[in-house]
Amino acid sequence: MLLGVNIDHIATLRNARGGVEPSVEKAAEIAEENGATSITTHLREDRRHIKDEDVYALISKLKTRLNLEMAMADDIREIALDIKPYSICLVPERRQEITTEGGLNVADQLDKVKEFIKPLLDAGIIVSLFIDPDERQVKASAETGAQFIEMHTGAYSECYGYEEEEYEFLKLKKSAELAQSLGLKVNAGHGLNYENVHRMHEIDGLHELNIGHSIISKAVFTGLSKAVSEMRDLIK
Ligand code: PXP
Image (cartoon, rainbow, N blue to C red; front, top):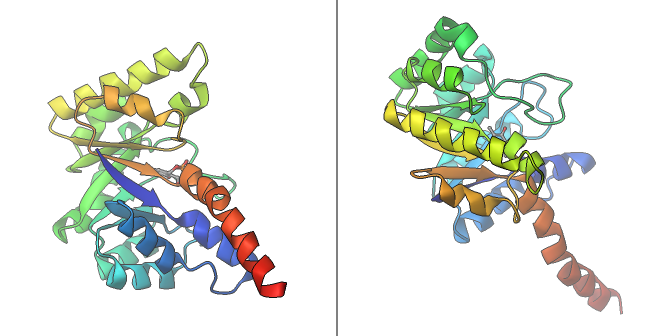
């Protein structure tokens, strides 16, 4: 199973000061050096973390693959067609949300999704649809021409360790089986962390996991002691 690292929160931290640190490109480089098989960024319509210049910089520097998350917005699609990432992942987007809260409703807007992704597919960009692990959404996704789905693991992650875990996990497992039987490749992500990720191995054929928040959060504490002691040494 491959690991895509989402580095959006490096940009969140950078933007808090409006400068250039911490560098998104450096974060991508470190992730790649340590086993990331792709780098994921979400160019949101409100540009709250990743900015246009970040995706242009990343596309020229990455050694692996850029997976660009995007909503069904024409101006973002123009950027995708310009930079040609390896893949895009179509996500729903609401301005007020803190993070991507649910999967894309492909089933109720099949023609719109098909029309939106056609130029991307024609340009040779792989298309993934971020959907809830739901039979209707999986079947609709298989009709769009997209090669991948990414299953939203948020509900599973939230229930992990509670009674509903098994129910949410089985939805993921069954959706992955259905998707694969319909010719789709399957990724998964959202809310996965160091405790709950192990169950993804129980789902046959999962291609790649996209993980951001838990990795960046852990990085703060694995790096904080060194950061403090280095500064302590400098000011002694
Ligand atoms: N996959 C998709 C489509 C997402 O929108 C996100 C969050 O940006 C992730 C994966 C990663 O989620 P998390 O940051 O919770 O690991």
